[in-house]
Amino acid sequence: MPRVVVDVMLKPEILDPQGQAVANALPRLGVSDVASVRIGRRIEIEFTGEPDLDRAREIADKLLANPVIEDFTVRVVTDETAGAHS
Amino acid sequence: MPRVVVDVMLKPEILDPQGQAVANALPRLGVSDVASVRIGRRIEIEFTGEPDLDRAREIADKLLANPVIEDFTVRVVTDETAGAHS
Amino acid sequence: MPRVVVDVMLKPEILDPQGQAVANALPRLGVSDVASVRIGRRIEIEFTGEPDLDRAREIADKLLANPVIEDFTVRVVTDETAGAHS
Amino acid sequence: MPRVVVDVMLKPEILDPQGQAVANALPRLGVSDVASVRIGRRIEIEFTGEPDLDRAREIADKLLANPVIEDFTVRVVTDETAGAHS
Image (cartoon, rainbow over all chains, first blue to last red; front, side, top):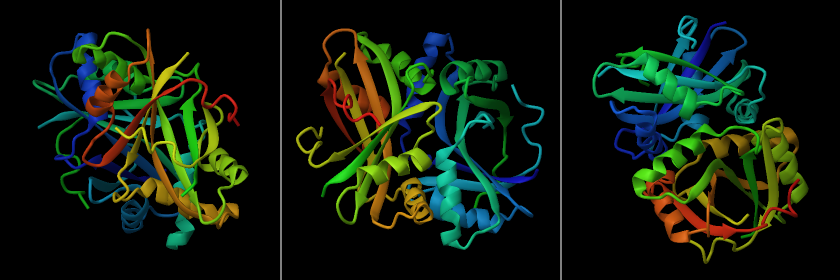
């Protein structure tokens, strides 16, 4: 079923200590080629009818993201992750 | 710069009360055609060299997701959100 | 103003990879005496009248926590953090 | 075992859309006497020896909170939630 995905990330200039913690933990896994890790939110919205991008954008703006510190994107997804599932 | 995106979502059979809260708040915005809202995490990993999917999968498995309750996908992203920015 | 605080933590038997990431990052800060880090949520609810623990418990159960994987506690707080602010 | 609890909340002047979503969902539960809901993080740190508040404060400052948008408090907890568990 098609759905709308809202990706919310801290603005680039806002420090992300949780991502920093993951980045700092990587050497213990033997990983030394990661420049940065940023942790945001991914929200999946299923509509009963046609996915509605304008609606989703309004929902994101009011209930999912804080525009002062976060950026968000909204898009319709059909089978994006089908082949990528690990 | 290409980067790896890890999407982590609760498994479908696991209740998501935070998504439920958003869904329950929608009628107050005049939205009545949303069937469900699920809130997960989106992690962006930038590598100093080539994005490394296997590495990213290992990082996700050890530090980003709990495989008992969450599913994750890993993919390389170049300009996915470029045109979709709200 | 008195308010109700709801603390939500993953059940002890559920792996917490985000806490694990923080724990694994500590040696880089020179910290070697931490046994574990667990990351949960703290929710502060302000009531217009008297803080209502039963109400808060119901809200937590329906909208804040997933009882299958998380434990929560509910308590009234008055000036708990007043002297402890860092 | 005594442990250190770090509470991280968005600064009061920073909008919290996730808390807002919960607040907006409450009328559907028949709850009309809640003025505000704020969602933060609670981190429990167990030390192998004596809980170390200064250490915990440093960890919070570097890996758990973003001082630009969040406030945090650090305290030693022994049996705080013992009687309050729901």
